[in-house]
Amino acid sequence: MARPSDYSPDIVAMICARMSEGESLRSICRDDSMPDKSTVFRWLAAHAEFRDQYARAREARTDAMAEEILEISDDGSNDTYEVDGREVTNQDVIARSRLRVDTRKWLMARMAPKKYGDRLEQVLTGDPEKPVETITRIELVPAGMPDNGNGKT
Image (cartoon, rainbow, N blue to C red):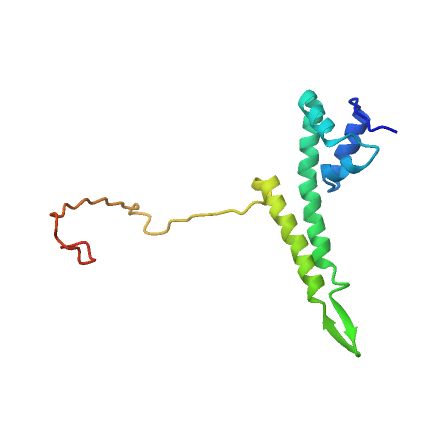
């Protein structure tokens, strides 16, 4: 059976449902019952209703990643193993779990920066009666005079 290439609301709904559950478009399009990625992009360009559904599915995918992060972090089932009757920490499993969490966090911050991106906050403190004062000063220094490091010659 050939891959579908004609626009179909049913296929679009399946693509968006799978994306909402956390699956990437690349992995969805690997499925023989799904259209090729280039076909999906062509459909996105041609169909506004698909673009809207796709955008909502992408947002839901970031939320699904947040849930995956919780599952990965809470799963300690392979973090240790037994050797000669004593429990040993499996550093490889822990490192792999950390990589999986960090990768999802990085992707989420780029896919939904307002929701999952880093926030920088700058707060100015001081006397509320005295505003922040900025002074710009230009000094002319005669040519050939050495600068002794304190701005004065």
